[in-house]
Length: 171
Image (cartoon, rainbow, N blue to C red; front, side, top):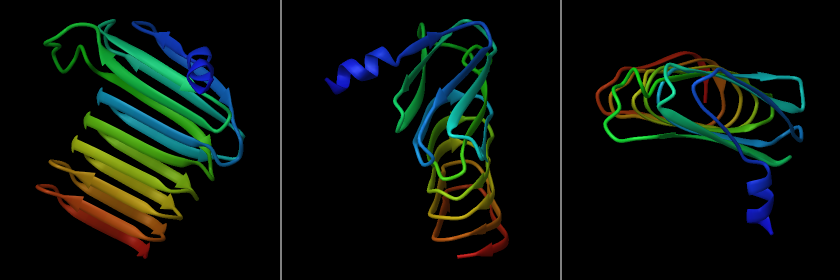
């Protein structure tokens, strides 16, 4: 029955701009897995998740699954061998401040700010900027810098070939 619930909450969009809002609890789980594009996530004092997406082409599908406790976004290419520009989708996302956030991205800037929940970032060629985060922070990249500023909590940061910078961090 859980699979049925997830399928009912599925939205598929492409080519045109995406703007969707999903009512949630005060501390939902949010995850996004994407191939290319800037991801900007900000915490706010609303019990909803708002997703805005700006695809560069109609070559990618965006699948959004939602329940009151969890919202997830996945992007999938419609065909093989897409150029980086064709696979680019920029996202701007608002989540409740107490949300647990997970971001997986292959390429593009990741910016997360103003959260009191757990944040996990997994990237390949992804510069990461985290600011005003209170909670458990995990940030890993292969080829991207990590900047954590004005944050506190348990912090794990790893980058194979990118710089790590901590500014006003207590952890």
